[in-house]
Image (cartoon, rainbow, N blue to C red; front, side):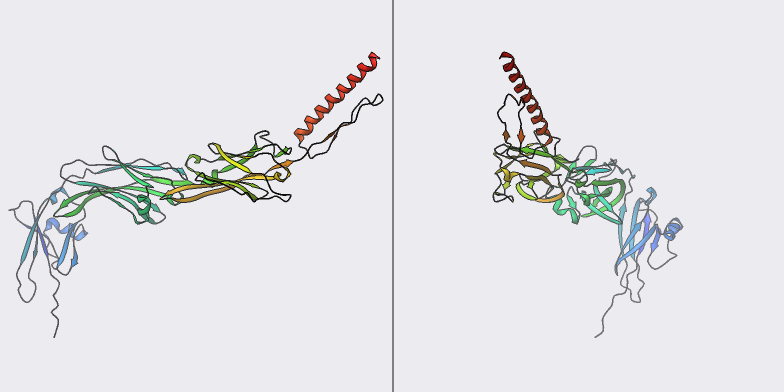
Length: 419
């Protein structure tokens, strides 16, 4: 049994300014000489064309619609087959409105610190001469690839690009409609993946017979955005509250150790910091970026168990380590390690940078003073210091020694004079 294959259906389009006016032949799918001289040049240039969608379905396309194109259009199916099946005809009215669509944008900052927010402002307006609808779309070009971020409209709904679905759901991308056609797209907590050339597209639509039809669109390049990595500006410094500029600290057993870790970054307010104090490369105590403090009570030095440490946040980017009643075991090279996190939304975190301070050396030593009794033949006292001392303490002891010798000498001299 053979198959009955339906041949391609041919179509002809005609046009008239008035519903009852004379029809002018416009374009045909089979007759190249069909167009009226009014349309022949536009058909030859491709400005007017017919696109076949299926064997029995075509679409008339006009690339650049003119005001003179307004009118009534007829599509008919002439019988070109050997067997006559009848002719069919349909009519549609085309209304041409002025192109009043205007799209403008504000240039975003060329450089944005990682972890901060970025606002992309786009303004779309048109003169309402006919019931039409608007949509706005933000995109970013990365190399040769153009990624759609978000579209608002024309039905008042929001459609996100595939790569931005979860981020929009988590609140990392927000649409803020304003007045007079102003729309803001806020991208929170930007990372290096947000770098690129941003664009804003405005489109005007009409809704007919249950279908959305695009009338006109305009795209504006907003500008290029670069993201500064957190690690580039992240800094950390360790100091003693007693001697801020010293890299060596001397303590006696029983003293309190107090060290300050100072953190700096261009985007510090947007960062969540994890702070870890270390002695000789071993972790002592950590404050997680959630604020929970975890200590290491089993940590020991080469001489024995270290004292119990405390850690508190004293200000923006300031973290204080404390150890009460230190012993020799608490000596060593102390450093502060910082890990900076940025929230990506939905309880997801991105580690944006890590840095460790230069060490501060802590010495814990017993200071002993041996003072022999004075004799009439020896008018000065011998002061013996047995300890590893910092320069600041040596200067202090030198002053005390001078004062002591002077006092003893004056006392003995007065005694001899009185005798």
